[in-house]
Image (cartoon, rainbow, N blue to C red; front, side):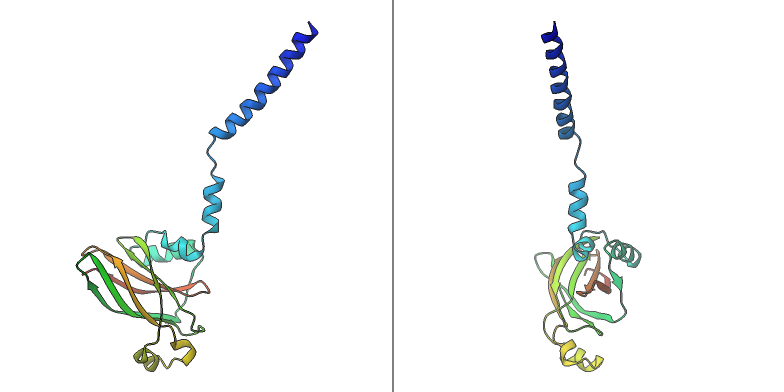
Length: 174
């Protein structure tokens, strides 16, 4: 009789432990997605946002821990459509108070963010017009490709290594 009680107690304990581990496997682990989100840098968090206009950009940038800075300036000189449906974007961007480190560029088309690249190379016209130091002028040129349907809103954003940003262009794809 004592052996059967002992067997019942052990069986119940094993059953409880097994139930616990089965429950752990069935409950979705949300910590991994939360941790993955926390590990993303501000640029990637912004790129994954939906941006259509100034208000949605300001909200997404705030959520990505980016700060607007008037010293980040730029212009898109041309948006040219290519036969494959992409557009070529050419222009410039600079952080007037920065150290010449390239700015990261994100283009949002139809609300979706695409990493456009980084500013790379000088532009004499911009250097002259803004009175940039040689250090600040070394990485201001923008050139990149992005998929963009005709009439879609395109938003180009420049982001400095210090997590400051500015919108460079709000327009429609040609």
